[in-house]
Image 1 (cartoon, rainbow, N blue to C red):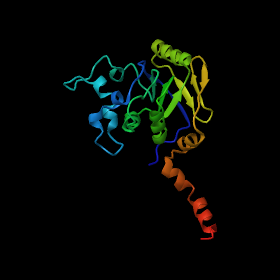
Image 2 (cartoon, rainbow, N blue to C red):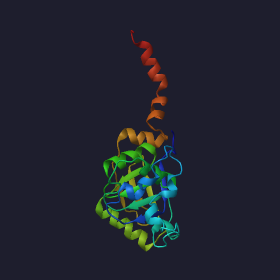
Image 3 (spheres, one colour):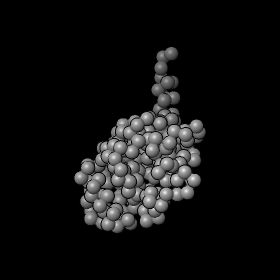
Image 4 (spheres, one colour):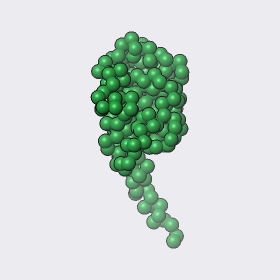
Length: 198
């Protein structure tokens, strides 16, 4: 399933300065029955966003119109807990194209990369700088440059580099999942197979 190509993303950001956000908080287990990727955004952080009577919780950041954007900035150890890929689906389906944190759980990080959400791991110091900038100005713009592997606070020019697997980077730039990548190499694969002696 191809997804949006990711090159340079410039956007304001939604701050969630909570550590150890696990996948059951990102998408509660009762919403895991569906097998298609669509619709999970409605239930992103469901128990934090809504009261028992389904009314929005006014004090939760996704219900606060002050904040918007395609970048979610989370606290340390984002995406811990169970390995459910639905958590990454919910983040993508809601409209986020990148998540910034000072540390990601490995499985959640991999699931994000598989579906087109860029996990940007920064230092704790730069993470705090970003949170403070958003608090001072909710319209603060971040630039995430995937080819250069940098994230920049545009107002000040403060910048930090981030790591990403080369294969996953290439896939994100081209909007490929693993199957799309193989299909993009179809001619090479067929050519190699034709040369085999059996």
